[in-house]
Amino acid sequence: MRPGLALASLLLLAPAAGAEPRVPPPAVMKAEAEEFLREFISQLLLGEAGRAAKACAVPFQLEQVRHATRPELLKALSYALRDRPNAPAVLQGLEILSPQEMEEKHGKPPARLKDLPWKRPGTWVGVANLSGRGAVLTVVRTEEEGWQVTGYSD
Image 1 (cartoon, rainbow, N blue to C red):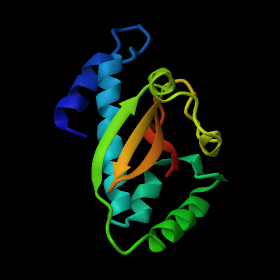
Image 2 (image 1 turned 120 degrees about the vertical axis):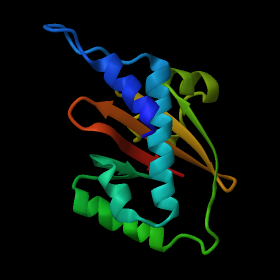
Image 3 (image 1 turned 45 degrees about the vertical axis):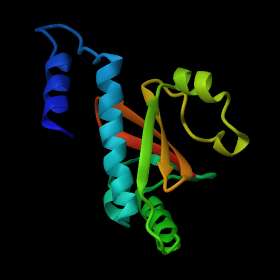
Image 4 (image 1 turned 135 degrees about the vertical axis):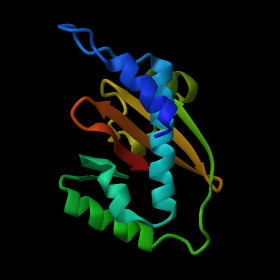
């Protein structure tokens, strides 16, 4: 995470004595979600399944399969990355949307994306262009775990 964003989040989240923690403004959350997803995607593109798996929540939705444990997820990511095409993909674009923005812009998700946890509170949706191929990712930030990717489909 860029130092400026981390500092902004800390300042915005620091509660006054006896007060409830504050939630950062949507623009800050969106910028953090984008930065986190860019790093996650770069790990995938570099074939670093272990680092990518650590950035994921469990359970994790990968395509139409829900992975309930981290070892199971690591195995699935390793397999998926091993069997990718020889030509490396490049991140050509990434758009971060709230679930409401996603639905307004793109309509209801197609049936193949129905299992992605894109409507959970605090979730952001990333729509990525990977060398002309679309990918949809979901990410959420919790107080306990920080940012975590919760689903991926391409």
